[in-house]
Image 1 (cartoon, rainbow, N blue to C red):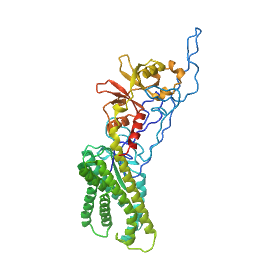
Image 2 (cartoon, helix red, strand yellow):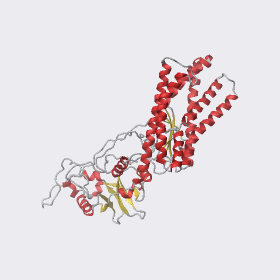
Image 3 (cartoon, rainbow, N blue to C red):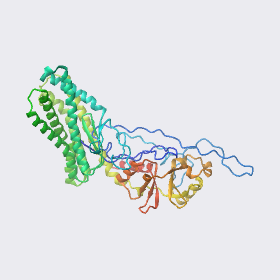
Image 4 (cartoon, helix red, strand yellow):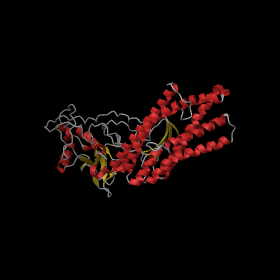
Length: 506
């Protein structure tokens, strides 16, 4: 089973003190990422504990000549929002871009970092126990795998007791070897997807072996339906090839022996993996192949996703109802039963789990497709706030006066030659009481610029989100191709635009 993705939903958290750089999670619609497009369950991202901005320096005492000095420090005032028209309104509180906004997401991967293997990437996602990095892609074994391995060991051990009773307790060691070998076959299946993706220059975040199979998390969508079809088909194809290899090896060993039983089990299990993944419904490989066919016929990727996702949901219902009926009737090779026993309950439980995985994966695929459809609407040039340049020693009150006069909503600190050196954080501005602003320099509220915080005004969609995700921050300097300052981009503005775009129907 393969998982492809892109970028997820953007988010913002409370700002940190000025001394800390790039402390926010960037907008991250990984569209791979409710997952990326995941086939199995994922968890919500961790919450972030907000911190307060540092207190401005204590005011000076009035001198004997009566020189004006700031009054004594008061309790913090409510954060003033940015008013329409570009002015900072200091009369009422509100949750404004860059102020005290926090978002809670569900249904997305624990983290949405950029793909591994490139410069300036974020930290790679964790997914359990790291087993290695074939082709530079990390392979993780999820904790749920150990539960399934124990279940396979127990079930297969019971079968060995009937076929090879002379093994005694050693049958469970043989069964454990079978469980590991089976998941090694699943890893080969996922590596086939990974190699194809890398050949098409699609970054792969990770491979994860988990409950009921494996997942290859591919960061971007294939550019053509033909590549999408190949990317999906190579997994089941490798499983069929493995089944053939085990069959040929089975001919060379004596039947009724431990090697014979192991090879027969691996051959059958790989046939089942291939057949199951070829079913024509998302999130299975067969569903992605169906999506590629509909995409080719209609010329619209979204049409292919909708068709394959609904077929996947129909498949989930069929598995939920049909699998217990088939096993109880004996159509799958077992003896027919007339009563409800433990085997029937286990079959129904297995069917429910499989149906839930398929149904959830189909829904995730629809959400990810919708996300990708709206990503081009996120354009740096359209979301950028107008900014005014100010010197490092400019009082905050004077800087705000200049910004309001120019209709701007952001401040860029520049050096004597006019080169930008830092960005004044909006959350730091709203944390300074109005009566203290004449005595607070903008440099004390600014965050130094790093290379990753310079964003081209021409960026849009996934490219824009990838840049923001690589360097988490609350504000970014947007520049023209010539290097001229265009304005300031707030992560909160990107988040709001993303939510608004996702709310519109496809």
